[in-house]
Amino acid sequence: MYTDKVLEYFRKPKNLGKIKDADGVGKVGNLACGDMMYLYIKIKKDGKKEIISDVKFQTFGCVAAIATSSAITDMVKGKTIEKALELSKDSIIESLDGLPPIKIHCSVLATEALAEAIYDYLSKNKRPIPESLQKKHDQVIKSNEILEEKYEEWVEHQEE
Amino acid sequence: MTNNKTKKKRVYLDYAATTPVDKAVVKSMLPYFTEKFGNPASIHSAGTEANKALEKAREIFANYLSCDLSEIFFTSSATESNNWALKGIARAYKNKGNKIIVSSVEHDCVLNSAKWLSQNGFEIEYAPVDEFGTVDLEKLKKMITKETILVSIMHSNNEIGTLQPVKEIGEICKEKGVLFHTDAAQSFGKMPINLKKVNIDLLTASSHKIYGPKGVALLYIRKGTLIEPLLHGGGHERGKRSSTSNVAGIVGFAKALELCLKEMQDEKLRQTQLRDKIIKNILKNIPNSHLNGHPKNRLFNNVNMRFDFIEGEALMMELDNKGIEVSTVSACASSTLQFSHVLLACGIEEKYAQGTIRISLGRYTTEKDVDYLLEVLPKAVEKMRKISPLNVENWKM
Image (cartoon, rainbow over all chains, first blue to last red; front, side, top):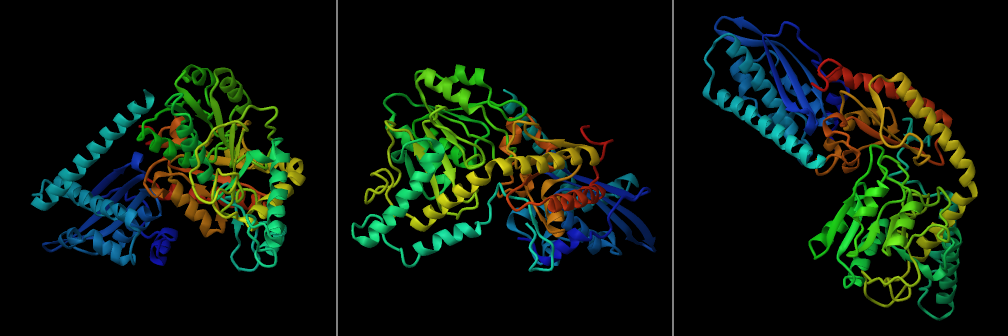
């Protein structure tokens, strides 16, 4: 079911852990659907460029969730913020030699975690937020609210 | 079961999913593929020879269940038997009523048959269970009305191993005048089932759960019970289930049952000890771990545990990496991303039960296998917890 690359990232996750004095933190996902990712970034300025000098993750979730979060940290380390934001779910999937169709949402979650970490960094530093990032952020917030609502409704329904 | 041929250690602890076919079972089947290949429906010598084997097998089942030979019907799977029991009874008794009661912890093949019936004019009601997965008898009693034609409640649960009070359910059904079907796929061959003493009208059993081949199962139907066939054809199985008989499979199924009966008492004792050793050890040595299902009233080979802060598929795959094969019911691991309906029915909140795995023991599980599991599992849980952002502080916020 999983490719060797996925299993490799799962068995030996890279950049695992927490950055205590992180410049930006992205928290996405939801316990109820079984995936939760925390992504921490450290930013270093190099002239005008802002580079992700360190990145770490913590994930609650399945093999694919752990592998995709580990893979994305590998891919963005040393990249500028702009370049990191260009990273798509497809390039993560490609770097893993593919994901089972039902697990594609894990790669989406990983890109969202990264976007949220960058959003957190920019807004903490009162910096302008690129339009596309703002859109993505709003989407994450909204979809999480919908999930929460659905879950609450569902729990109530079960209790009836 | 440790496989020495490959270098990697392999400890199979998923016997509730399926079992290896016993070598003696394979041996008993082989002649029926080649020299004794006849069709039991043929009346020449080859057919008679095959038919004798078929009827001898039927006798073994009838003896075990204390029922009549004519009450055993061979099918291709527990799924078929359960589909047949629900749909066949529904159609045969539709003039009596349109209500069917199933428990909320049934196997998917019962639940989805019931769902199909609900789209075809029948009303399905779900009997609730308590925190251990045991059907609430008082509530069940109240649910049965004069429109009810069938109650289908499993003998024991495939996920959490909880044994249902089938004797009492049988009495309630008898008193209320409704038919009682039980899916005994997980119990069959593991404990005595005496149909003279327990009121059961229909019972499902499967071969591959008891070291027999896949593709064979049976449905017991009490004499006098009306049932519509699912499969129409040449009139096999006394006109109730057409299809050329799977002679080799049925012979193997019967042999498998014989072997189970021979060792039943010893295996019950042995596996209960191993089961309880695992449960005790995990609860003692792995913090924030919980047992799902009934602490005592459970299948002797079933352990079902949940671990806080982590997810089941990842834990299962980490164990697999160490050569231990178990199963999980986490949403992530299912083909539909749906969480276990059994745990939900027990009132366990989905959010907090994603880290659930089922460990099921069997004939070839040794003490050494169990010790290996108990050595590896705490480390695997620890590793997954290191990856997870969740811990005692932010859990259940």
